Image (cartoon, rainbow, N blue to C red; front, side):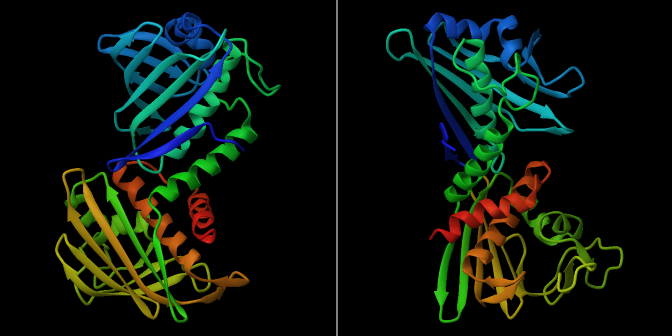
Length: 346
């Protein structure tokens, strides 16, 4: 699969840039980007609102909509809009979408689409999504189209197999932006991760120390220390059990070794320990995770070593990122697989 786009860090969020050439003039492409009847055939049904516009995406029963307003409009050259997606019971944070049109030779034009301030972890979905949507636009403009493409954008992939392949590649590309450092120490592997989170330090600390939050990104809470109701915050010396009681060996016993309010949490991890430090910044909260050296272990029929440990923590911090954004975790196993591809290649 060849990706047309690139992902980049944008503070605690991400930017997505996708390019595609079309057999059209700037005027023809501009019409497809701005005329309601044209938009309905490749991205969504447009309607004006008191504050700007709304795009209804998908079929008649779909709840996926985008609300936005036009910030900059330079006909046949540049369009900049705000973009806020709502769908599947989730409301994403406001973002910005920019379309730039440039001539690309006789009878051809280049469209560069840049989506800024996209929430972390969701950037891969946007990368694959825009790549797919621009394929629908290609059909609208009369370009060559695959047999799988629809006559209009119905909220389904123009080519489902291509979309899934692109999504996996974009996930690995995003994982590489915030990859961990792995260190080999004799028979043990240590992991270091830094992640800038789009949330204040108080919210991050809650996610690290309150049972209803811990169970939604780390592991399900099996037993919380001295608190059958599972309500109180962690304290130094606490011992908790997390995992899945229905699976042999899937429950971890963790002891809190050190705790400094809103700043540091250290707990046991097998025969080693993990430290998490928080630093408030102007853009959010910097989380620094250090896993002490852990021995390679056999599991699921193979040796598990540094790439497995790094991918595991990477996935968990992805889940924490989504929790802090108010979004659900999409296919956690695929997050691990995307990260593992990055670490196993080192």
